[in-house]
Image (tube, rainbow, N blue to C red; front, top):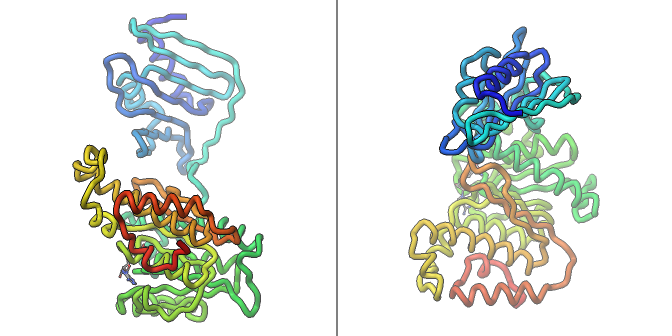
Amino acid sequence: MPIEFEQATADAVALIGDTKSLVRAVFSGRRRNMQPNAEKIELRPVQIKDEIKLQLIEIAGTTSKTSNIAPDSDLIIKHMNSGFANILIESVNQTMSIRFTKKGDAQVFIEASKNQQSLSHDKQKQRMLDAADPFLREVGIADAHGRIKPTKQDKYLQVEEFLRILVPALTSAVAADHIKISDSEPLSIVDHGCGNAYLTFAAHQYLRQIYPLIKVTGIDIREQSRLRNSEIAQRLDISESIEFRAEAIAQTEIENADIMIALHACDTATDDAIAWAVNHGSKLLLVAPCCHHDIQMQLLETPEPWPMVLKHGILKERFGDILTDAIRAQILRIMGYRTEIIEFVGDEHTPRNIMIRAVKTQAPLDQTAVNRYKDLVNFWNLTPKLSQLVKLPI
Ligand SMILES: C[S@@+](CC[C@H](N)C(=O)[O-])C[C@H]1O[C@@H](n2cnc3c(N)ncnc32)[C@H](O)[C@@H]1O
């Protein structure tokens, strides 16, 4: 039934302020000729110490901002009046929805419903790495009180999400007997271009709880990294199962590893890392590439009709990135790996948020994959760095 706009908003604000029964409220859609404060607003009651507050989440694109406000805060009416078309309010015994019409009045629907209230503050994903784990403090991600440093939040999340993909991939590989672990063959992992070894230590600390027989090696060209990381390993008393080497990936003396991981190994260091894994028979590869220049620099003559795309510098750069990772994935397929490209973390945490995940299989050579690869590199007249580092059977 249509009612006055002011009446509808006053009813809605009263229901939202009733934190004893509010489950959640959602503001969405856009009224004609208006620009709401966010794409979507969500509100729900949360208990913080002895107080009940409203958790306010303002969502815009892939980002969101969360704050806790008083249940009678003016912000509620301010957001509601900023131009949202739909207001949904779920309370424990009813659901109310309001649709603001083009004419400026409101269609209100109320129905009886059973909704469950949760006052828990933390609705986030369960963390894989305990912020209080001493290794996070040692590597500089957490402070002395076991809190993640604001400047390290992004790296912490990158490492967490990397692990979130690594763990099930490893479990499946072990279950399928692709990776065999025994007293004489510990699970071996190499992290190429490990830098400050955030991921190296995280993988070691997390996985050793599941696979106590483990050997993790971090490789970085910088001696300074080796020194720093080895000292941390000593302080954590884990030097027996984690090792750091100052070597170029292409020259490392490490002979094999079940798993190769690489997080943002610069430019063609990612190609070196992939080639090392392929040439040394790693069963599982997880690689989040960094900057790309190899293919970018080979995009000199642009076949028609592609000049209409590549004449724009930014598109050329992004296209070069896409082509680089697509070629890497295709080479892995040709080399007998089941390969996918996925997003491993939101782009608000790093613009380099693509991951190549590859699992070695016994599948015969896929001629279609080979032909497609040849067509692509011939079309663009490319000699990808990775194709020179592995023995392609073509
Ligand atoms: C962008 S940092 C990433 C470090 C770390 N993986 C992380 O995510 O924090 C890249 C690292 O790769 C190392 N690196 C670059 N080229 C390398 C190569 N050819 N061999 C070994 N390490 C290399 C650099 O020294 C640097 O520490």
